Length: 352
Image (spheres, helix red, strand yellow):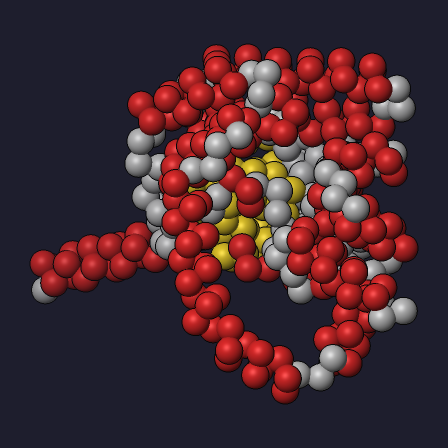
């Protein structure tokens, strides 16, 4: 009987340990402006680092009246991956999520987690923002990621500078700071987060050696990480764009696309005859009605092929605010990229 009881206890302990391999808990600052829940979103590729979308959310935790929340489970990969934790304003929906950078509205943090992570996050109650001056416990790697956040997020304020020379100096200073952080950081994924925060569009051509050398560093330190492949692919695209060469695989895709297009041409024209021209125009018009005046202004600049940086400079807003508006525009128009958004804009005004 004694042996049976001991065996039963062991089974219970094993069952309990298998149900919650990771535990992420903590406290946030919560007031009436925020929904009482924390969203946990997977950052599967580098371009998702600042993208708020319902499709990226893998778990949601309730926040109690004291601001405490808790995530636990056994469904994360064994290797470290990036995850973003964020809150949403009361007026937002799952498909209208928005990331706010800096100030009292800063509503997100990034963490590196695996299936065995045990992390405690504590916001400073003297701050108004949900994760204001937060502290990380039980993870030195995430403390390093927190140090990067202290460097990056206040820097978004330099996009408020009105003088081009002042803005350029601030951008160059931040670029050097991020490079130094990446070079001295012992954690390769944290270093990658720093490099990912640099402005590839602005600095890749002048600092190509740094970006290429960092790719070699990732291949040596974390060769099997999906982020390594993602970064190398990104660098190759920028490198080939700078060299003015079109890689062979693009030609291959183009050839396949032309072949498929030829086979489907007849079917397409028959299908097109069945479509009503008024339906897509009405749909585009209804989508445009969902946009605010500021979002319409940004959409107009997108249709004029303006970059995020040019939009920020034109409207005197931060780059992060531009990105936040873009996410909201994409969600409202049900599109995935700038080209599709511009097409909706052009379709709308062609019918006016």
